[in-house]
Amino acid sequence: MERVIIVRYSEIHLKGNNRGYFEKVFVANMEKSLKGVKHEIRKQSGRYIVENFDDYNVDLIIERLNKVFGIHTLSVAYRVNSDMDEIFYAAQKVCKESGTFKVETHRADKKFPLNSMQISAAIGGRLLAKNPNISVNVHNPQFTVSLDLRENGKTLVFGDYLKGPGGMPVSTAGKGLLLLSGGIDSPVAGHMIAKRGMSLECLHFHSYPYTNMQAKEKVVDLAKVLSGYTGGTKLNVVSVTHIQEEIHKKCNGEFMVTLLRRFMMRIAEIVAKNNGLQCIITGESLGQVASQTVEGMTSSNSVIKDLPVLRPLCGFDKNEIIERSRAMGAYEISILPYEDCCTVFLPKHPVIKPKMKDVLEEESKLNVEELINEAMASLEEIII
Ligand code: ATP
Ligand code: MG
Image 1 (cartoon, rainbow, N blue to C red):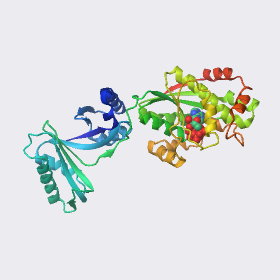
Image 2: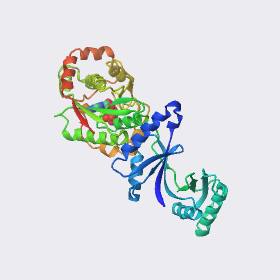
Image 3: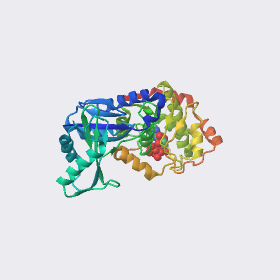
Image 4: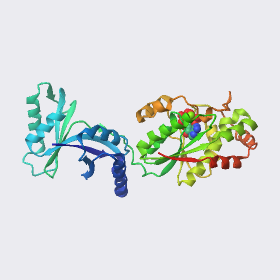
């Protein structure tokens, strides 16, 4: 008797002619996530079987696979010879100690002497005889014992269907640049977009020495969390210290955030183009803070020449975002108290609905091109 893991995939099924491509990427992503852990992955009638691993690694493998987008459900199964005694022995192992249950049998091996109804009845009967605390309920059972008799003379015996992360395999939907701050929102935005199959690079702006090195470490840690889902990422880090000093010195302070955002977007577009990335992703959520109004977005969007800006959190409430942040494993890092560059030189009353005419007038006091070139010269690339 050996343990295997059954991996069922979700939307990949839908991809008609491209299916081969999606599956290839999907398997490569699973292999990457299990790197360093002994295993083999095999395709078997529309799903994958992870096998030949050491039993003590089951939980680790499940934990890793839970970050591979495209996986719909997972089951830890016992694989035995298709022999009623062996099947029963494994069925006992997956059977719960009490509650209502049913046995569900799928018989691909049409040569097996009993049909699926007879197999379910026989195994169910033997389980009942062994344990007085369980009873059968075929319509609404509390748990199911599943038997899958394969053509190769082996049977998979399993209980729960564990929910996988869903989504599409990363790197089947292009590449994007995530503007990653140290906050709660942007990692969640990246996670959502990666879930739809996009691979990510990250871009972080700091204002060292106004912000400290711990703030940067925090962002590295957040990028690591994301890279658990994307199979690696690159973190681009750019200093906006001088830009902020210049805005502070020469412009109406109320426009600090509005103007800084425009610089961020310009730099983001350059970094994206230099790295062959196809869009910019931010963690903005409509109305969450003063700068996240439609007017603020109009102002920051208008400096972008031709890349789409994706804002997946626009329609989410903060508590929904926090829930997702916890679920993806970023929350505890995001709430560490280090300062973000946006909080440096923050005005008491930031302009909430900036008018383009005023934004352009304030910006005309700055040498935009020179400041951008200077910021680009500070670019540092960290491979995660
Ligand atoms: P977050 O929780 O992601 O920091 P926030 O609620 O603090 O978001 P803002 O500070 O207005 O909101 O930032 C909006 C978005 O702009 C962020 O989600 C992020 O995508 C981008 N951004 C803000 N600050 C930075 C930064 N220092 N580096 C990179 N991107 C940033
Ligand atoms: Mg922030």
